[in-house]
Figure 1 (cartoon, rainbow, N blue to C red):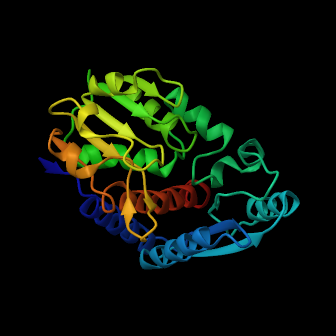
Figure 2 (cartoon, rainbow, N blue to C red):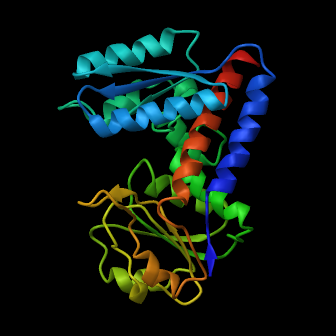
Length: 276
């Protein structure tokens, strides 16, 4: 069984980003917008800022508590020539819909790839700034020389941030993709047909060994903490590992690559504007 560890992939991406940042004159700058009082989002934000500093990217954050403040913060980031990229951390303030963020975030600074324009580029197969977790899944599999062409891929989850973007990236690599969601009938039967299974739901141990076909590759994008503070994913790792040919651990699989790819997107956005 292959343990699909993401650390070595993330380290390579981070090294490449740092080398490129060191070679340019103006330091890229990431602005993070988050809702006041969201402790988990703040912890992640501070971790992201520390990682950004390691690769030479300046990063800071602003806190907002309403939709109006979010609009103002996005506009400030849009007009600032010193800001290369902006992300808006979930959860959003009460009453704010994701469509507002998708509409307002400027395409060239949308390093999370959530805006309408970057989503359109992704679905059209045109290069753009795409969601980091979706890209992280592809980068992980490419590192382990996975051959996508013709494979039956099952993606569990249809979110705009993860499930749908992953599905499109797999389609662009000539996989045959099935998307499962909360209304899918006979989920176990559908998943069992997958040669590649990507799960991004956020539900503890949704996928068990009896749902996986022998020899499947399994990528678990889920990450949460249980009541004891222990991390867990969407797959029952121990059980699935008995059946699968390859599986990502949680933590240590997709997560480290997601952060690295996000910072790579910041550099990409910076170069698109400042180094044409």
